[in-house]
Length: 155
Image 1 (cartoon, rainbow, N blue to C red):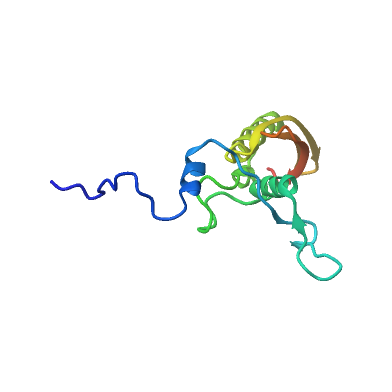
Image 2: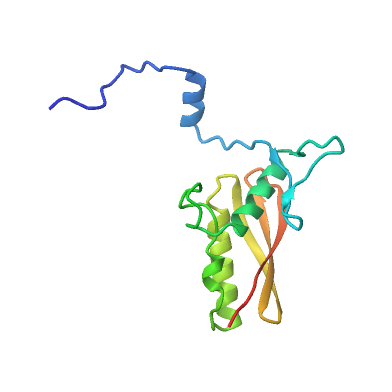
């Protein structure tokens, strides 16, 4: 039977450098847009343009957005993007179990990005029916950042 995907003898249509770069294990950091999560909108410069985030800031923005985005809810994102913290809402689990699950879910979410090297040093604060947490995130370039977020409405 004939091969549906014939061998082209190593010939590439397009930019050979892109192919070589895709084959290497180089992690690229790009630019992004700054977002104000309290206001729910992109940050702007005094001239009214959307503020550009440098490579480190763009990675932090990705981390914050990934934690806040529910996994599997939005078709535009892959099944690897977002967190499952929503699954904990309304649960009657003890605080220790919820903290353990938050740690596992957030770590899994952030390590999905090749730019993230480690996630650790979690701390939790319980206020009423909600839980706020912070964690330390380290990039492969050894940039360290502390992220904060919340999970609310338990039990």
